[in-house]
Length: 637
Image 1 (cartoon, rainbow, N blue to C red):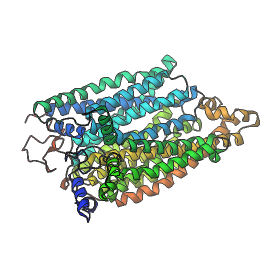
Image 2 (image 1 turned 90 degrees about the vertical axis):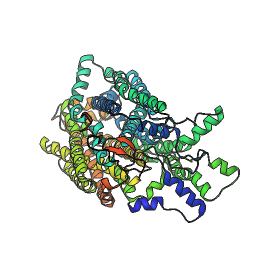
Image 3 (image 1 turned 90 degrees about the horizontal axis):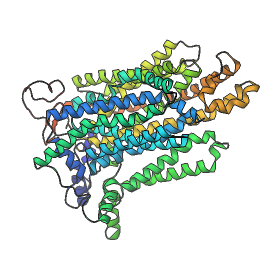
Image 4 (image 1 turned 180 degrees about the vertical axis):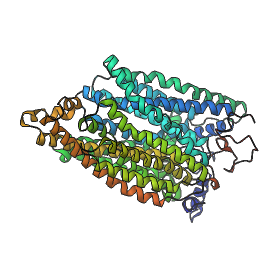
């Protein structure tokens, strides 16, 4: 075992601390972000209702049920991937129709903030209520979000809809990855984790065509949003059927658990939900990120900028809440460890016995390095490839919507291909670390070359080559890093690590969007005012807020030259910051442990892709023809 895991499970010196450590060592097997408390439920059980339910389902899986479930996972991934490509090609026109093209970054930050705080709570919902219920909640939020977006009459309505949409789509993402972690061993996990990414190989190239077709045929972007409220729920039906049928099968086998969280009087149920969901932690974390990140994007657009009192106050309060958050998360454990008694002890038992963030995982060098690495990876991504590279291609390079979309989606295509290839190699070699190191190097090199070839005189092939290189580096980073983080967490914290990993991805995305929005909001208006001819200076605000106004000027005119220069110089600033963000990525890749995946506890049990796992976390010798992986599913035993 790794030194990280030994440190994590090492008992403390005092007797009561030994009891705490022994309770934590029992842990959860491949489930949500719960720091296992000592007898938190009062009955000696450390598992919540939803955790027990999914463990019962895992013992009742059949080959057919797994096929149906994974078919639905792929179908939903295809739908959400295609939806993303279509919407990404239209979002600048949506915001421009509201005369707020510059709101693109703010909308991205709203999404990033929601994404950053939804993943652990959604995993907690899956633990308290069950996987099936959590999937249903995510689908409902996703559908509601698109209904509101399709009917929005102003940018405020559109931005508000991102709350529902982001919560739903993020919930689907975390639940898909947790489901895959529940039903694969470590050797197969990297490859199967790429399943939700496979649709990008196709949707990358057809998304803009569909988006453009809808715009040209209907003259409106609304149906491009509204149709997903119908399509995704239909794609979810096979998975829903599989989960419901196997829940019934578990009940018939007598292994379905008794639900306790929702038992008792109404006040007791509310108290249980507050405790089990860690509502205090959710409120603190959500408020802190919102108060810190959103002002960062709007500060550059305010007359007094960063000197604005509201901006300073929001960031200050957000920082204070962020400091309070870990104290809240450790409160219950602190009370137990130090023998707090009386009323205070009772209060502490209802603060964070099941903390939203398992702080004890930070003792793992690999876990911490992986989370820091992926945070900076996405900060750099949102400063370079997204969101303003698309606008740069249309304005500076004078590309049409379809061509600009194709180039920006080269990253998605090449990173998907790269992740599949690397996952196959990981399956064969049972190693992952050095692919992360190589990926960090390629990613940094690609961003550096992107900065070099940013000028309008650079060849288009050089720009495309940079996107391919960045994509291949990204594919070698993302999936293997997630696998390393999961492997470092041990048998009891696989899904905990997954939720945390995906959470810091959203944090990095939000930070990157905040920085890019601040730079864009400050630089573009100032540079337009400086470079535009005197007769056009009055239009600087309109050009900044509406990309179609910028594109209305013919290439080669003094106005278009000034606009292109403003965009180009601002992209240079963004890319310079992005390259600087790559230094921690490479350093963190070196700190990750080079695990031998087939020699570790697998973090799952029951029938999974890769074999059958026993109660001890090790594979059973089930004989020839009964190793349950995709290559043998459709063979007769």
